Image 1: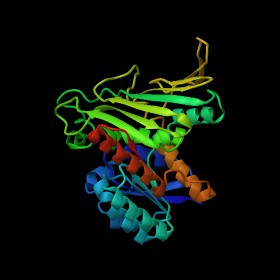
Image 2: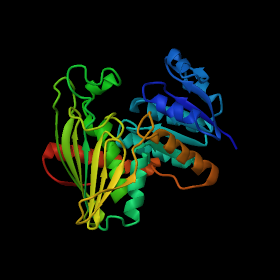
Image 3: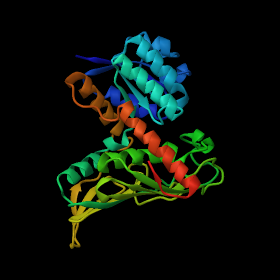
Length: 335
């Protein structure tokens, strides 16, 4: 069976969605739609300037690559058209309430709705998860991710790629930090409590761009998201991993470096052992967008379990909201 794919949106990040579909076996990209027909045509796929025209191609999967303000309307249209599955970019919808309503509609229609939260599909996190499940570092006690993309300095920060970043009143956590909210959930389980200390370093932007968030995970695991978009880390491409991670257990430590490599050091030892070599993919995040797409295709064709369905992803939105409330109230909060 060959699945028909349609992409709604041809902005900056759509290149990674579209490129993934174009390189995948078992699917056909039947169209890309955007308000700017020129942008849609530039993708090389059949181009449309409206969602109605796009859905007239009768896709099996609609891949929504729009800002949150366009999500609810697009999902409603897709459900009415009879698609078999929907993938929707994050941040998902404009509010928790809207996200709940849309999730309910999709469930009532029996259509899988998956949020395109792709960081957990980056190859280094899949490898880390496998090593944790195998007991490589014993009982996990602590984890830290240091976000250091180095793209947030000066008056021109973000203008060349995603200029709307400058105007987002909630930026670091809402746009970027949610990736690690979800990744930490994937690795360690849902947190019970969070504490956040957020700040703005670059005065030209509207929202926060630095801060610390701590998470209390099951089994006594404490995780720290240590973020500053004005600082960098040692990598030929600081956007590959966007930082470095350290995951520590009673039997050893896993380290993620900026080249995507993972190293293991046994407890009490000095020498490290490489478990996964540097990533060679030239696109975004170890080709994680394509990995998520393949995950959805596998679910439709072979019945494999889906990750990040909308109902499950509502938890990420709830955690995000609690993080901001923690920062405002300067106290640790239950999620």
